[in-house]
Amino acid sequence: MARITRADVEHVAELARLALTDDEIERFTEELGAILEHAAQVSSLDTAGVPPTAHPLPLVNVLRPDEVRPGLDRDEVLAQAPAAEDGRFRVPRILGDVP
Amino acid sequence: MTALELAAAVRAGERSAREVVDEHLAAIDARDGELHAFNHVMADSARDAADVVDIAVARGDDPGPLAGVPIALKDNLCTRGVPTTCSSRILDGWRPPYTATVVERVLATGGIPIGKTNLDEFAMGSSTEHSAFGPTRNPRDPSRVPGGSSGGSAAAVAAGFAPLALGSDTGGSIRQPAAFCGVVGVKPTYGAVSRYGLVAFASSLDQIGPFAVTVADAALLFDVIGGPDPLDSTCIASARAPIAESVDDGIEGLRVGLFAELLDGVDADVAGRVHEAAGALRAAGAKVGDTSVPAAAYGLSAYYLIAPAEASSNLARYDGVRYGLRVDGDDAASMNARTRDAGFGAEVKRRIMLGTYALSAGYYDAYYGQAQRVRTLIIRDFDATYRDFDVLLAPTTPTTAFEFGAKTSSPLAMYLSDVCTIPSNLAGHPSMSVPFGTGADGLPVGVQVLAPALGEPVMFRVARAIEQAAPA
View (tube, rainbow over the protein chains, first blue to last red):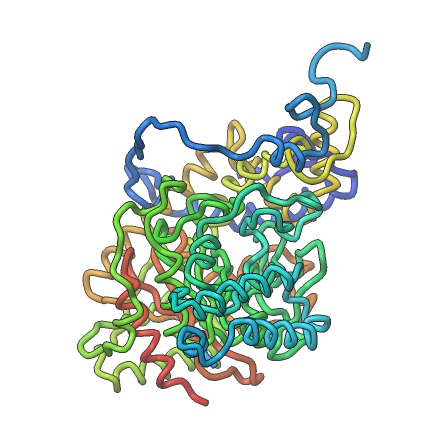
């Protein structure tokens, strides 16, 4: 597989919502390249027809009676947020121009 | 005194829980400035909980099997109203609005949470050097790392700060530090213990488990924390018989396999201890043979695609909106990105980047998909081996505890210290580390006992036999 480039790292940082510095981008380009080279050893095994394992247990849906139960206390939860207002989390502008 | 002895003395009214707790708090005061096992010592709430236990005993009530026993909690287990940091700046100041199921069970059986222990940030690391609050030192030799990520919990037990501790193990984070610090550490079967209230790292691999000085104490804590929990849908729904009473049942006739792939390439003194332990098991009546789990040789590679992929998804929740740190930006997206760059340390960012890349369009099948298929092959090879053997024996780590800074410049070198522990996480199997003598440098060596899913009863019996034969 092709070695990871600086442009790849910049793209992935955007996907991961990480505002990396130039130094970090430089360092991760090199380090991720080395780690991925090792990880690519998985390609050397023949896995034709082998199903993937996403989870170690044979899980089935877990159901419970649809009964009202107390949830977390809203004020206690909001008290832990960086900003809250009127019983909701407060965030900066998501869409549109600055008013 | 062991946890079993302490609890018996407290239940019988021979010792007060308050006195037990005060003794352990004094030990922490005396030496934790040097070791830094704890991020936060819960002195006041521990004394209050001890008083509740003592009042119950005075009234003639039984507080439960952990009566008055101090327990150190890894700081990624949520404790309502008590700071839970995951050793990360991004959770600075956060106090969870709920308590992890395992902690509730400790409290319900008379146990005393005594503090929150240091870890590699979000449990990502093998030395606690990736903690935002500085590393923990190994009580056996403070110039060495305690291992990680649950290094604080292992050090707390090794230093006598608490007879028991809880940690979490995603790729070896309980067993590796247990081996480095010379204590017992157990990773249970996936789903044997509720993960409710454990801050998620890689959800298909994470399990909570005990640290203790003795195998019997580890069984005691495992019995308390295990079992079904409606708050964790991945928790096995059927109840299991307690382990504690069968720990001493012996190993006559059990088939023990020496795990070839994990003995290959480890330090000679460490491998020598494993062979010595195998000899002791043979002498105690077990049948010992060589065996192989060929695909396990690819465990490390598969793990370092699967775990970061899951982590990149789990850690998306740290967005500056709901908890901890926020760094302002012009809009929500820049606030998210600035908060995450300021709040996460280098190793966490590295794994988020690695996982996001492995899951991204064009690479998903070659990396993440292939790693998941290799995971299937590893499980199949284990299944084949367990047709001939009841348990497997291996080193817990390739080396004894290393020096600070020895592996921080190369992420890959650090990752390689998990090579012996990762296969059990990928398979969802139980595994535990038992101290067995020292290496050439005089530092503890851990022997690892691996078992198939739900094989804890046999695994603990074998661990007990190894403990009995361990060199002084």
